[in-house]
Amino acid sequence: MTVAIQTLILLLSVIAAVGVVAKRLKLPPSILLVVTGVALALIPGLPTVRLAPELVLLLVLPPVVYSSAVAMSWREFRFNLRAISLLAVGAVVFTTSAAACAAHWVLGLSWPAGFVLGAIVSPPDAVAPLAIARRLQLPRRLLVVLEGEGLANDATALILYRFAVAAVGAAAFSFSKAAALFAAIVVGEIVWGIGVGWLMLRLRRWVRDPQIEILFSILTPFVAFWPPQHLGGSGVLATVAAGLYVSWNGLNIISAATRLQGIFFWDVLIYLIDGMVFLITGLQARTLMAQMGGYSLSELGIAAALVSGVVILARFVWTFPAIYLPRQLFASIARTDPAPPWQWPFALSFTGVRGIVSLAAALAIPLETDLGQPFPDRDLILFLTFSVILVTLVGQGLMLPAVIRALGLAHAGRREQRADRAEEVGARQRAIESALERLDQLATERRLPQELVHTLRVHLRNRLKHFGPGNDGPDGPQEHGQLGDEIELAVIAAERERVNELYRQGALKDEARRRIERELDLREATLLNHQHEE
Image 1 (spheres, one colour):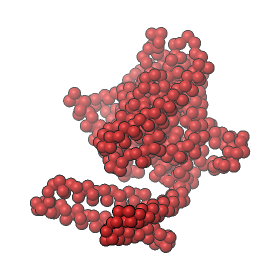
Image 2: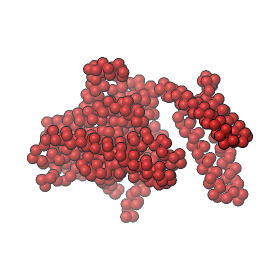
Image 3: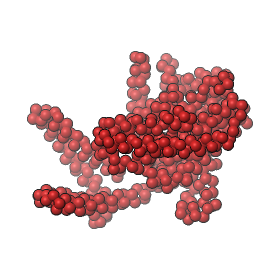
Image 4: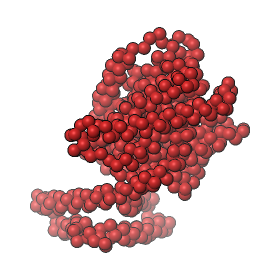
């Protein structure tokens, strides 16, 4: 027990240190964590850290998927559903088939074992490429497609993986029955996920307590994921459906206090989960190498290069026709959604890095088949999966910024950001105008004191003037806003210093100090959020 706690503290320390280095180098922490894990695994004497597959599939994957789904815009997801589906379903099936063919014809694996390998290495991980893509300001639609694909492709891959594992050692395999079961799983999980999202939102509106609501938010992904996964599905689609439902319908149900506390809590939780998982992924290198004693280094190197090359190439082969062919075949699609430049599908193709879901699925391969025989080529499949993760996550991940710049897509989303900013300013204006109208109504209905109404009206009109049409020049709202935020941050610092001084002198009770401190923290967080967006 003591060793486990010490190991946990050591891993958390490594995550913190790598996070600092990654921020200085402007690299996604996931890439450096995997590299660091591999380096630590090769140091003699360090304790071996084994990654339990059920830990990832049952405890890690649900909150990660749910958090991404809640952050996703349902409107943008629905608008890009065709592109997301072609990648999350079509590309996964195509990559699974391509990897299975290469494993069977070149490496000599049986067809079922080849499809197990293909299903494992087929789903890309969106964590690292999205971090790079956002920093380089790619067009918004590319980010939405990447994020949407990352939500749904794990479901397709895990369902195919279950079919392939069941086919190993089985006397017969019916494609028609598998296709019907696949459709039933998809429909059933979506319905279940929506039901879970609906129920949890009603419970949260009923309790109206931030701590209990956050507890319900923690339980939601597990309630959505576990039953379908136990019944033979993936659980991922149900979790995605629950997250999207909460994202779309939770605006008027979830209280402001819960939202503020929940955002901070989930940000820290997902950061710790991602960091721990990517670090432990690298630490599996020692265990995997110890199991490959029956193969020579040349055999392992050739097999790893072959499978990695097929996986990378298959995404390119699929993505270009998937984007351009529908527009060639259907004129209505071409009219409503013109074809993007070739740089877009190239960028989408190059971001196909593999991650923790692939490793967890590989580790979850049973030791024996249903017939009681050893699972064929299990150790080789594990090694090839780790090799694909290492090649794509580290190799492609480190090359991605240079590729994006070479394609001319770096900072291509700035125009969209300016348009979004103008849209935001317009929304703020209309919201403040509605607030002024409501203030006048309340003043009449409740006969409010004129001094109170005047103070509130002046405050709202000053905010409206700040976002007015006269402030759109070179010294417009953004420049004025930055200066105003800077001044207000300095004012808050002065308030904070004075409050702390009064507290140290004994002129202010601790409970009152905490209330004032919370108010100052919220104001400061709002200002820092403005600066981050700008």
